[in-house]
Image (cartoon, rainbow, N blue to C red):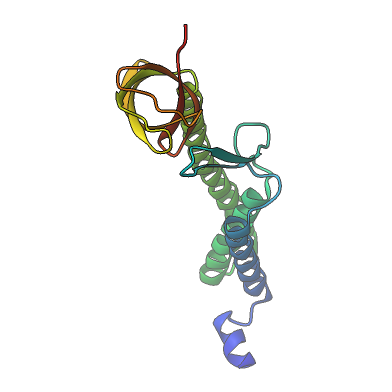
Length: 200
């Protein structure tokens, strides 16, 4: 077994080292995605309505600098190590030049980490846009288009950021809100709003 292992790496300690770094980087990158890592930017907003019209929400938002993961976050470093080890191993295996392998590995490692950060920040900004939309709903007003029963759901037409949208709605006071009543949103989540009549 040991002979097969060494034969795969041409008996080269440098190849073994590069490949080990690649494997370690891949492992920590995967663990970062599965379990999350400190120092990265992750956001999770969970909204839940029950049949009584109550609204529960949890916020778990962890930001690093508010703009997504940085170059020295755990995931970025793991990706850089993966790129360094993988490319270094390939160059070393086919050229046998450890200096060339090291330089190529460093260059590709930084490049891979940079692309990785761009992708994660793209997702981060998309998530931020989604949260902004939820904030816009909180200022929205509209009209009941399907009567909202005391305990249940109806439908309202809202003007949100200059757009008209129809949403499932429930009453904040567990009192019926009739068709045509002017309302305002006081809670929002999962495409459903909790509303109350506009009294003035």
